[in-house]
Length: 324
Length: 305
Image 1 (spheres, helix red, strand yellow):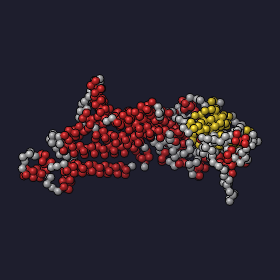
Image 2 (cartoon, chains in turn orange, green; image 1 turned 90 degrees about the vertical axis):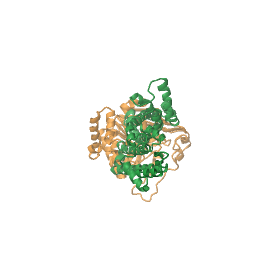
Image 3 (cartoon, helix red, strand yellow; image 1 turned 180 degrees about the vertical axis):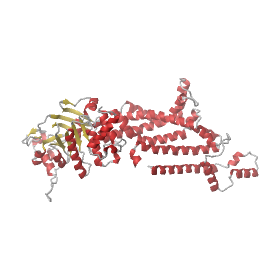
Image 4 (tube, rainbow over the protein chains, first blue to last red; image 1 turned 135 degrees about the vertical axis):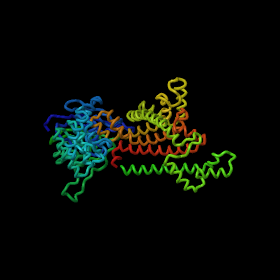
């Protein structure tokens, strides 16, 4: 991607200070995102994908979560450390918005969907009450909610899961954010609805010129949508590469393991390879490279030292001693 | 929704008939009313004549039907003390009781809503801790004792507000506080815990992620959800205040239904007591019906369900 950088994340660390200890949910994540680019953030649950997304919004879970280090720059403006009211007024919803995971629980049950889509428009001062309602109907129309005007007066429980997710998307794009974060937006949907929603997201992104950070554990979904993909493990990005490059030639042993565990069409009877072992206990991460206990190539160095991210052939970055 | 209302209405009718049955049976169990009405030296013939006049010589089922038929028309007989229809005596005092109960409810809500919300938003903070102490006191200290303290300090020592009787707003303040005191604790705790759940919900997270100001999220989007469990409580406590305000009414010499019923108990004025029991049952049923209906306004899922 040669376009100008929209988002620059450097060494971001978000830790959760729990009674049982410090959970390093995001532990030194760096990546860039160009305008209109789609970056996939993939990894197992607990790898820190969602926490990374929330950190970009300055919304680590309270009261335990805190961004302890690092920098998030949007259009060159540092977001980490901005006061809460500035984040509310100028950043969340306005410049960065998030489509959350579960459409069934992401809408307020006692307000009409129209009122909920109009809320960010009013909150960010784009329009007053009745005009905001009109704009909300336009947004519902944009996300292809049929007969948007009538349906804007309905409540969430009167919509199907797929339609609810569209309403959530309408809330997120209502103020035309520069960056859209989609946190597993399709995991809770039926497969056919998933495909529709992915098409919709792609179209919305094109129409609103937003960059997209697509968080998922589904490699197939990521491959079909994303320009580049960042693979997360235990709070860090272990590999970041062009989507085609990553699928053709994954460099990090974890990426290789992930791809080997995905069933492929036309290869019936072939055994799937699972990554041995379990994801590490996030409160007690292994020394050195967090993946070393499960890695077939682990060496003494892997146990001692965490590998830095280095540029590799093909333009990607890998954090692995095999490539250092 | 209409089927639901019909069902609730029917349940209400059953409850009121139940109350009538209890009143009817208790009346027959509590001894011979004729003995109470006639002078000590009345003859056996006088008794028989009186029983016949009152219909007490007829079989119990017949008596019950007659009783129900009269009760439906609001006829519970005349008060022995006042020689006037018992129900009319009480209905005359209903506005005073309603006024007090509403004032008590408003006081409770004015205190419980901000306390509950702020306790949830700043969990473990100063307000939360003060509210906890408040809740403990509220549950442990009976309303009538609070009433006595209020009279002693506010009315007698400081002479800020009148201690008894019904009149203007000033008369209403102390009894309303004494009456609304008890529910504050429970309402605060209920609101706090449902607000905590809601502030942790996915939709609040979504509302934050699109940059809605926190005060909108708390006082509009979350609070309306948190009201659903609170409304149940409001119904129960309001009905209790209407039907059970007699202690406070006695303490503050408030001319309400409760006090009239207490007076009637001491005077063995059975028709008034019976009318009071039935009136309380009707009020309870009506309030609960209103509560059931109001769910629909707050929560559309119930309206359409």
